[in-house]
Image (cartoon, rainbow, N blue to C red; front, side):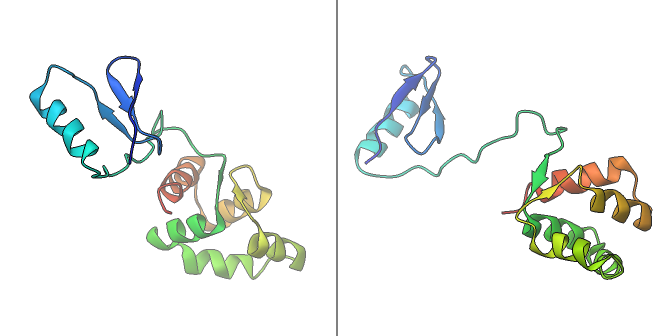
Length: 130
């Protein structure tokens, strides 16, 4: 069962970091507490980025590939990667993270005609994939 702890008086944080608004005078809130006490579990609130314009420094390789596919750039990127020296191909294929400042990203962007804004948008989009 979840235990509630007050956080700054207006939000309650659950142990899994889900948050719910706190208003003890509100009948709906009181009913919500009764519902929780009965053993019901709330859906966790996904973490929200502080600033949606922030570009992630890293994404996972899977996130990067999903973003490239969604943008219609996966095949062109794969074809470009195949032209790189073997060491750079291995770096791309076996990376545990894709860094925004990686030289391969800069090379791929130049080859594909993508400017910094487009690459930043791809990284932001990639960060939305699980």
